[in-house]
Image (cartoon, rainbow, N blue to C red; front, side, top):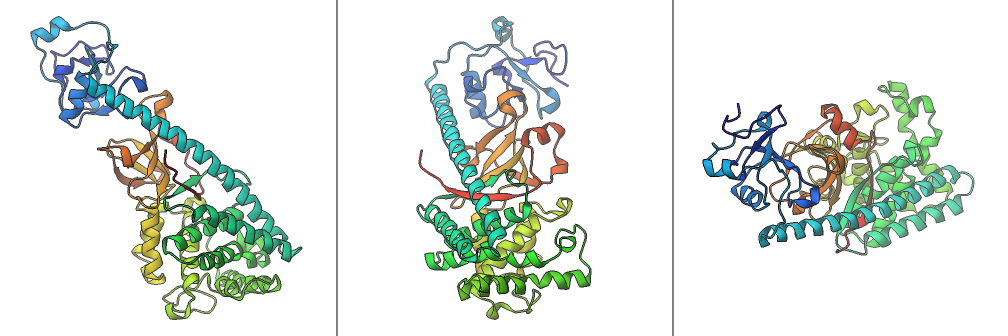
Amino acid sequence: MPDTDAYPMTNESNYFAHPDQLQVGVYIQLDLHWMAHPFSFGSFKIKSIDQIDTLKKLGLVKIRYLPHKSDSQPLPFTAPQIAQASSAICNAEIVDPDVLALLAAKRQRQAQHEHRQAQLNACEKAFSKAAKIVRSINSQIHIDAKKTVAAADQLVNQMLDSLLIDDDIAIHLMNGNTLGDETYFHILNVAVLALMLGRAMQLSRDEIHILGLAALFHDIGKSEVPNRVLLKTEALNRAEQALMEQHAIWGVETAQRAGLDPRVLKLIAQHHEYCDGSGYPQRLKLAQIDPLARILVLVNTYDNYCNRNNSALSLTPHEGLALMFTQHKAKFDPGPLNHFIKCLGVYPPGTLVILSNDCYGLVVSVNASRPLRPQVLVCGHESGSENAIILDLEHENGINISKSIKANQLSADAARALSPSKRMNYFFSTSEPI
């Protein structure tokens, strides 16, 4: 129970303490505009003496605290503190140079966030445009093969121009609600992830280009598979699985008629061949599989784990990577697999998390060169603008990811604020300096 010498209360949200009463473990709620204090959140559990020093410099005469969320209670009231007490909660003008510097740094972070948001909006437009091209490619391949291959070639070149222009690349979670056809999103996801991984492995532009074309056409043979099998949400029976496995062969035949490069045909043929011989259609093993096909099968498997026909059975991105690295490690070439995990991090975009400050979050972007400190859309403890803000963990001291969770573990408020998508869709952009 709270100390009876603290400010009187009328309900659980009306406990107040003088700044000198604060100690580590007290959960406070600042009744200030978000930009009027230097903290990332207006509500948090005090974790350091430095935070207390900063709170004292805000000029507040009393600070609201929540006893039911606190690990400790405010220190006893002293007579001088009682004499200084006032009914006002607002702070005086801040003059302390340390706090002013912290506020300036916070404004800079906000400007950086606005810049990143503009980048993300441009990335969403590029993703939508690419998805429409992918849709056209797959619907026109049997009608005008030459034009379709040329469009695919141009798309891969455009993506490579963006991907290879800078050393700093960010992988973003896209909303993916533009076209409403999940087949094309899968193809684009595989292409984006394959190009990103080829770049991380420092392959030549020509090799990455071949990989990109193969990714765009890898499932072209599925047009021959009946929808009752292709879209089935339950496990396939033996006959249905045998039919599904034919799509790699049918894809090679279609790509050959379209005049695609022989190396592209080989990758299409092998995009379901696992290194332990458990894949299809030929049950090849590591040494028999083209090195580029090993990349293609890796990213294709990851996206299939995360975006299953039955979304209830889909793995989270964190679970998908963990499954590939632990239980299914023998299926993949260890070189590409290790690079893939380094690029996406332990918590890839789309992963729902709980942060060290007990907030719920959704990983929305990962910098390929700093994957352990992603950008997270965070559901705060207050309403309004703080209810869902983006934190760049690279610049947030003392805040990190505690664990990954599933959507059904979110609180109702967090589910509304974060609005997690049932599909994981990715695109990339350069991380431009600000």
